[in-house]
Structure formats: structure tokens, C-alpha cells
Length: 302
Image 1 (cartoon, helix red, strand yellow):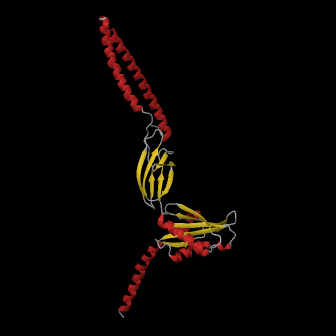
Image 2 (tube, rainbow, N blue to C red; image 1 turned 180 degrees about the vertical axis):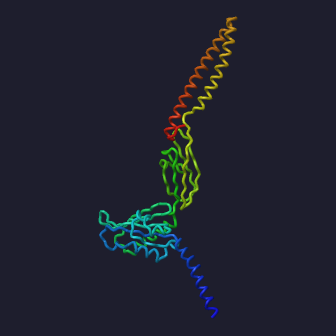
Image 3 (cartoon, rainbow, N blue to C red; image 1 turned 135 degrees about the vertical axis):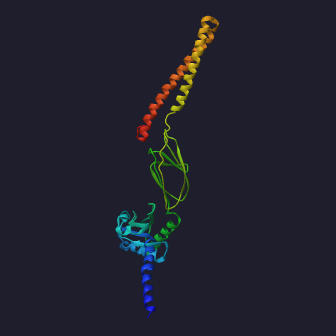
């Protein structure tokens, strides 16, 4: 009689703690969503292909890490479906049956990696094939992509300003902003643009993870600093030779033999003043031009 209450208490604890924890684990499992396969071929055999494919994949346990579930919705409707929102979606399958120009029956099916947004699309003729054969073909292709590469790394590249030339591993790959889905590995990223310092980065991408690069580029513009330094040097030399010219002028007034030296220093002084004037004018031009370019590129006033 004493053992019976103890046994009931043990059963109660088992129900309260063990079963809920098991249910929680099952809800966290990743889901392969089999969606609607449209049929415009006129062959009614393919009207209910999605549930058949669900049974085929789930029954053969081709993807043991994924639970399979079907919804009669399109790929675009998947993320607004309330039931689908409660699942830990990993992959989604959808497609369509249609006939080609010579009445050949085709299947076009899409496999989407929900985590990265990458979509793989395949098209194959299936005339003369049975539902079992087509379902097995799709299931094997899904397994192959899941195991070997559909789970790609996402790389999003933007910049300030936009529209910069983008090079990935030395290959021109468009302009910013741009998004890539790439296999795992090491990549070299280079961004370049006119009047901007180049930006480079070494990236290690991991499948299933997203990496975002958004550098604010350093403005380069026209070489104002070099003109300023040259102007300062020319101005300083002008003062030095001006003083020397005045000294030789005084000597020249006393002795005509200093005339040659006076003329040489006079020419040098005029040349240095001219260079200084050109340098300062160029510096001002570069400053104003860079200010305008910076405003155009970055849309800010500095």
C-alpha cells in the first residue's frame, strides 16, 4: 500500500519534467518545408506531388537532421504563414510542372536555404517517369545540396559613398552595395573609387553565417598638401634670395663688378616668387576642388 502512492508520485514527476523537456527539444529541430508544386502540364498525376515528396523524403530518412513538413503555399508566402513562423525552418522546396515547346514534360524545382536566402533552381525533363522516380530524384538532389554546398556564407558589402568598384579575390565583382552567397573559405576584398583611398580586408567566411562590411572610405582628392609644402619652400627661398639680392644691389652701387651677381640673384628671386605664387594658387584650387568633391561624394559639408 505504501509503494502505490510512491509509484504515482514518480509517474507525476515523469510527466511534469521529462515529457515537457522532450517536447521542447522536438520544437527546436530544423524543418524542411515542402511547398506547393504548380502543375500547368495538363497531367493530373502531378497535382498532389508535394505531399508525396514529403512522404518520400521523410520515409527514407534521407535528411536525418531535418524534419519534413508540407504546406500548400508558395515560396513567397512561406514567411507570412503563421504555422511556418513557429517552426525552425532550414530549407524549403517548391517547383512547377510544365511542358516545353515539343510537349516534353519538365520539372523546375527550387531549393532555398532559409538561413542565407540562397536559392538553387534546377530544371529537368521527366517525360515517362513515375511519381516515385521524380520524388526520389528531387530528394537525392536536396540531400546532395544540403550536404555539400547549399549552406553558403552570406557576404553583404556596402560603403560610404556607394558605387565603388568591388574586387573579390582579385576579380571584378560589381559595385557597392552588393550581396554574395559564397562557399566557406578565405577571401580578399578590395574597394576602390576615384579620389578615395583603397580599402582592403581579409575575410574568413563560414557557411550559414552572415558577414557585413560597411567601410567609410577615406577621402584622397587632389594633392593639396604637396602644393602647400612646395609653396612654403618657394616662399622661404624667395625671402632668402631677396635678402641676398639686396646685399648685392648695395655692392653693385659701389662696384660695377657685382652687376652679374646682382642680376643672377634677381632672376632667382623672381623665379622663386613665381613658383610660390603658382604653388599657393594651386593649393587654393585644390582646397576648393576637394571641398566640392567631398560634398558630392559624402553628401556632407566639411
